[in-house]
Amino acid sequence: DTGVSQDPRHKITKRGQNVTFRCDPISEHNRLYWYRQTLGQGPEFLTYFQNEAQLEKSRLLSDRFSAERPKGSFSTLEIQRTEQGDSAMYLCASSRRKNTEAFFGQGTRLTVV
Amino acid sequence: GQQLNQSPQSMFIQEGEDVSMNCTSSSIFNTWLWYKQDPGEGPVLLIALYKAGELTSNGRLTAQFGITRKDSFLNISASIPSDVGIYFCAGQLFQGGSEKLVFGKGTKLTVNP
Image 1 (cartoon, rainbow over the protein chains, first blue to last red):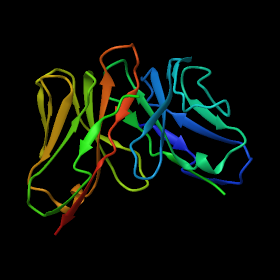
Image 2: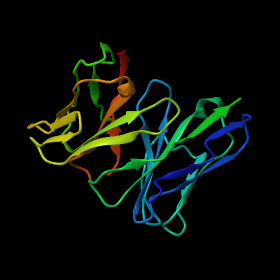
Image 3: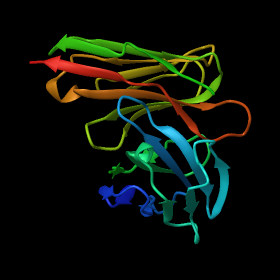
């Protein structure tokens, strides 16, 4: 059990570019969550998957954001036409089932310049 | 949206002192989780609580799930320098079928040797 893995750890991109982040959950966990965290705030929920099904999306997830978990294992989060306001830490978490511990990865720090 | 009120926002203590922080909400939660986050890293799970009134310890850490299901506290005894960081409470709502975690804004702990 190597924990939740996120890649890359850091990403600097120019405004208007597309970026994609990857998350590999703990292997036996069927639930995968994406959160966004800005400076001085707690993580804010973006979306979650149960296996390959995306079951809940936050209003924070604008049309420029899309997440996938095609085979119920790893997940990707894509941001199209990035804006400076997208600069944040993007966190992935996984859990075995509902109402159990959620374990977070180390996050991807996005800076849009 | 749902909010967790976490207090205090920050604490400055001497090594060896005990620490207490808490979270309250107007909503009912069925799970409370406490996390610690170091700069540039993802949150690390400290304690998970699942039943109203439950009191759980993890080493020097003790947390309780409030009887009303609307609050939780975390105590750290005999603080040490490595306790420095930001502590977050997170709750999973009781109703609505949502599985998202709602986070507080964090308590920043500084321990003076």
